[in-house]
Length: 526
Image (cartoon, rainbow, N blue to C red; front, side, top):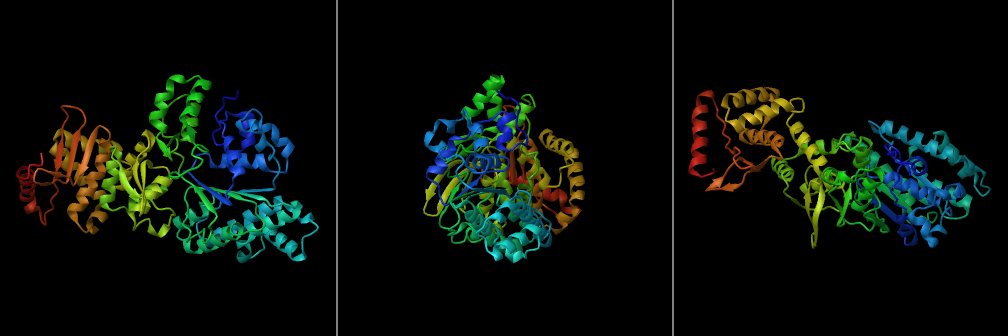
C-alpha cells in the first residue's frame, strides 16, 4: 500500500500509481446509469473536485482505454460489472478553467485565446476527420493559432464538441472543472459585466440543447445564478453543500478517515482529526476537509490551519470589509457556537453580496466557511441554521475579524489590550485605545456614528477572547440593552460590561463616563 500523501496531486493515474488513494469510484456507476444532461458539483476549494473529474476522464475516455483499465483494479467500481462495461467507451473533452485569471478584460481575452489554442492544439488530430467542411477546418485552425475573434471564441466549446462527434461518430462527454474561476476573478478585478456575457454564451452554447453532447459534468465553488450563466438551462442538476445526491463524492467521510488512521498507524489521532477538520454537513452526512486531513498526515499528525493557509480567503476578507455592524455581531456569535439563521439562495448573484445578508451567508456556506447544522424547507425557500464547522475555520474567523479592524500586524498588542480590560487596567486600556485610533484616524473621522464606531471596533477586538469567553452585543439585560458584555466560561473569571459614549469636547469626557456608569447601574446591566 502506498502511504505517501497526494499533496497537490490531482491526476488520478498519478495518485493511483504512487500515493495513498481514498476510493471514490463507487460514484462512477451512479453518475453513468442515470446521468442528468448537466450535473454541477459545487464544493469549497481543495475539496477533491479536480481529482474526481480526472477519475471520470480516465474511466470514460475512449483514448487510451486499455491502458487506463488497470487503474481501477481492486477499487469499488471494478466489482460493478455493468459499470465496467462502460469503461473506455466515450469520447471525452476534459478541461479546467482553474488558470483562467487576469487583471482586466483585455488580458482575460488573451488568456482565453491562449488557453483555447492549447486545447485545440492538443486535438490537432481532429483535423484528419474526412467529414469536416472547409469552414470548420478554417475555424479550428484560427482558434488553434489564436487568431479567432472573441465572438468566435464564445462558441468554441460547442464547436469542439461538434468536431469530436464527427470524428468519433458518437456524442462526447464534457468534463469542465472549476467553471466559475474566471467569473470570480472578473468580479474581484471589476470587469464582471464584460466577462459574464462571454461566459454565458461560452457555456450555454455547449450545454443547452446540444445535439452533439452526451452529458456534461461541471465543478465549481459557486453556483452562478441562472440569470447570469445558466439561462434557460432546465436540464441542470446541482449537487451542493446543502442538497446532494452524492454527498461523499468529495471530501472524506468519518469511516474513510478512521480507515486512514488505521492504515497509517495513527488510530489514536482520530479525535484530534475530528476536532480540527470534521464538521462539514452535506445533506446530513458528516464530511472532513480532505486537504487538511492529508496535510495533517504529511506533517506527522501536527494539527494546523492547512486549508486556510492555501490562499483564497479573499472572499471572507471582502465580505467582512463590506459587512454592516450587525452582520459582524452575528459572525461574532457564530465564533462562540451560536447558529446563524439564513434563507439560502439557490443561485449566486454577485451584485447582491453587499446588499443581501442571505446572499452573504450563502456564499460563506458554499465556500466552506460555514456549514448547515439544520435545514428546513419553507414556502420562501430553504431556511438553514449555519455554524462554523471546526477548529480550523474558527481560527480563520478570529484572524479575519481582527484584520477587519486593521490589527493584523498587532496580535500581541491586541491581546494585551483585551487582557487590560479583564484586569481593570484603565491606564493600559486608555493608552492602547488611543494608539489604535491613531492607526484608524481616517476611518474614525468619516464614521457616521462615533458610538457605533467604538462599539464595532471593540467588538472586533473581542474576537481574540474566543473561545475562553462568551461575547454578547446589544442584548437585553435588567431594564435595558448593554452595548457589549464579556462572560467568562470558567467560574471565578472576570466579566465585563461595556457602555459606549462619545463627547463633543475633552471637557465633557468625565461627565460622559459617569453617565455610562450610571446607566449600567440604573438599568441593572451587571
